[in-house]
Length: 382
Image (cartoon, rainbow, N blue to C red; front, side, top):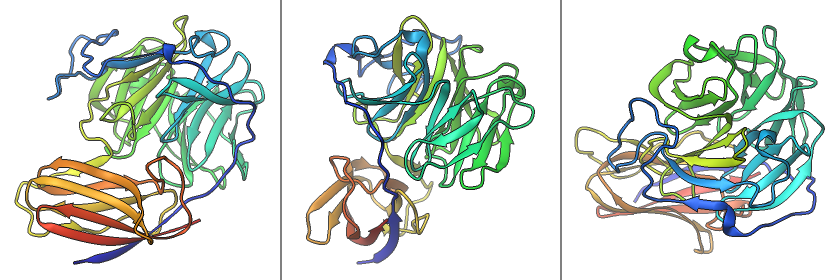
């Protein structure tokens, strides 16, 4: 039995939050078998499950759950693994939305003219009035994000590597720019004539496929991009896109989804099929039969905010990966399903099955397959 060690950490932050509000479930419609894209493109992309790229899987009616203003007030949207965060410009507040209700769980005010929202470890927002990007949780860092050749900055990425954010320019170059959040230095940019010809509004990052999604109301399109900004060829039309957020941890749908906030009279958030078939798992199947099974090399090590646990199987069959604390209490079930043979990796965000962060200390990851069992030690610290 092999034993490997990986170090996992997180930063703790706290919001200054206003009084929470809640609503009933009348604002949601979800069709697990949806196959109709209400904004179809000329050529649909078909997947094995019968759904198509761009299919609308769920709609959240923001007015029905108590969101003030109208749909033209919707701006930035982001996702933290459990909640959606929507920036409402009617009252210049951030609203935290539980999509399983759906309901507004809490809200808090910002200064006027905030636009984009995104995440590194903490929540960040961009203010189009002063051009600064602000960390909305302690330690409340900020940096000037209006680079030369741009008129304004809009949406912010999620799930990119620690210490960096991508921010989308609106007007001027219409490119996306990467910043070091500690120094405020612009360290890279991407663009392509297919989408920089007009300004976009939404930007998000898919960490497992290593791709960006970008789109906006001027183009009426959503594109999947390589990390150099070139389109992958997968795209779909969608009206009035205000912001995008990639969700690879969905508790509502069994596969990763793309959340889209729109800026129009309908006043809705949509859960859309991005045509990725595996939840949580970045799959790299091998053409040949694997010679070993068990946990393999894990990266990054050390890490902040989560661990990517890699493993290999020889024979198709049941695969279970579970996290236990040192007392033997089950903390999190990461994988429990039938899988084909191959190498895969699954992400643990250092949270339990209730999405709560546990204490520092030693944890054990167990792998159970038809070939046998393996154990890996995980050390969690701030």
